[in-house]
Image 1: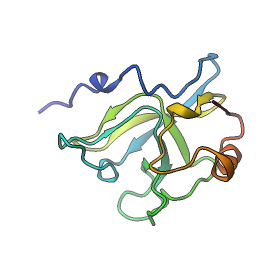
Image 2: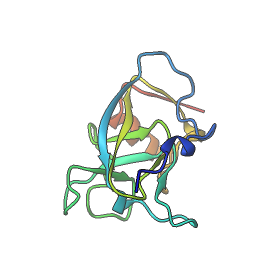
Image 3: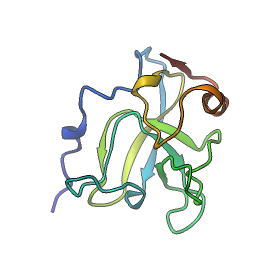
Image 4: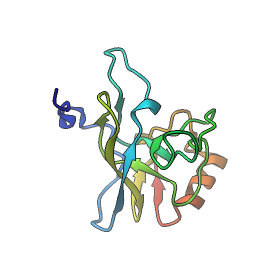
Length: 139
């Protein structure tokens, strides 16, 4: 069986960047499919603009997964150099996949970001700005 065409998950929305300057910096990391919940169609799909955090313990250590404030594997931590936002949607139904994470010199649209319950306003936003100091979070 071949991988599903992940381009079909790239939709007009969400679009995490407010606009592109050409200076955006991204890193490639492996997204652990076991950290992504199944949707109604039994697929594991991560939307564009999703906050991913580094897994620091367990059998998925050094991979990334969606932020989860109740996790105990590192995905609950907002720390510099251990998080980023997905540029586009990706399907990890068939297993772990490499994913491009935006993390520096970006102008993000807060309304287009998803964080698994992470609040992109007030105190949590201050923490996120401290972890990603070269980025702008705009309304």
